[in-house]
Image 1 (cartoon, one colour):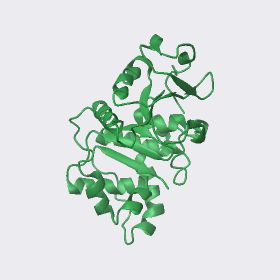
Image 2 (cartoon, one colour):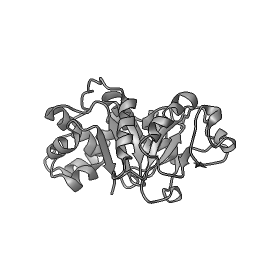
Image 3 (cartoon, one colour):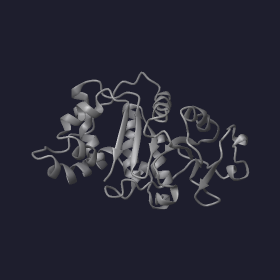
Image 4 (cartoon, helix red, strand yellow):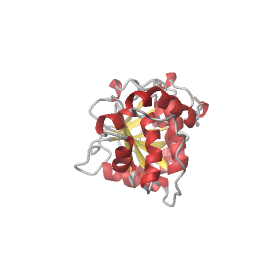
Length: 257
């Protein structure tokens, strides 16, 4: 997969990242010594860490993400070498294929793939929204309070799962780059950013979520195709999911069984 110039190897000799204009806490690199694909901190991020890492995008081409959950990275089964390039895929085609494979069984009487939902006007800064969501999720008492900070050499936030070879959706899709193509489309249409990953969960901030029931219902079909378990495990219909999980909601969470 095409990647930007990787600055992570410089952290082997300069763990604080000062040569890159950074001030990193203690951490470790993951991947080959000459081409690591992930830096992650040893300790919990805390609410202020995301904003502290944001300059890494400008100075080093490294994008922030939070890594949560109880499992250490050596149990995540990261496989970047098996992933294709998100640019090789079209979001509409990817989602249409998933819809055709799942909707007839899980949504009785469902019609054919309805197509992509319209883009939403975006007045908010998507990166600022991501920072706000990250700060909220890492506040004491929230479910990502113990998440660790990480940096990834990615061109777009949407590409982070493919760059590190994340296998969280393995039971749904083996090549996460196909899902990253959808994330790219959500970046463009809704100001989405990948904020956090656990072993099997993906958390996305949304600067411009649907503001009406009609807009939310149009988007619900995409979410079902992207992650059917989100709908079938906790909601009785796409309409219920749209109203409870999408309407004016700046955080989208996905979990694959």
